Image (tube, rainbow, N blue to C red; front, side, top):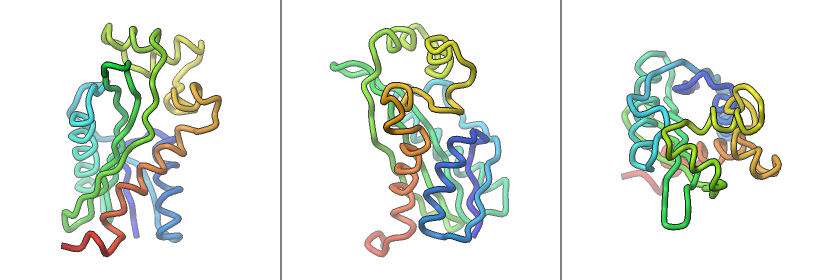
Length: 173
């Protein structure tokens, strides 16, 4: 079994690998860079799902994998503030698709204000932490939960939810 992730971000690849190894212990997981075809900072669930579908499909088409995984983080404004979340899409060679996500976190207003100005979350977090490329490390989730929930863990959970449709007989149509 080969699983391709539509990203070269090591956190996302590790999260998919952790999830996949719980289902198929001998699976090979690798990432490739693909263009999601959406904005650099998705601002809705719908946009994130479109990007995740694009990532999964392009990764699958560009490889000899059995399943393509498209991870996509996003922020979404609400009456209660701006939330950070993610959507993951899993697509097999037959075109069967599962979508997972969850684990939303209310962002601090000072971070949300910067994103509303058009900035991406990753660089905003880098500025806040005086660090480089935090999105390939602990990310906002790890930072804001004091690493009680890591970015890898939250993407891992969402990947399992996306794979449910491909592994559970209740989804057979």
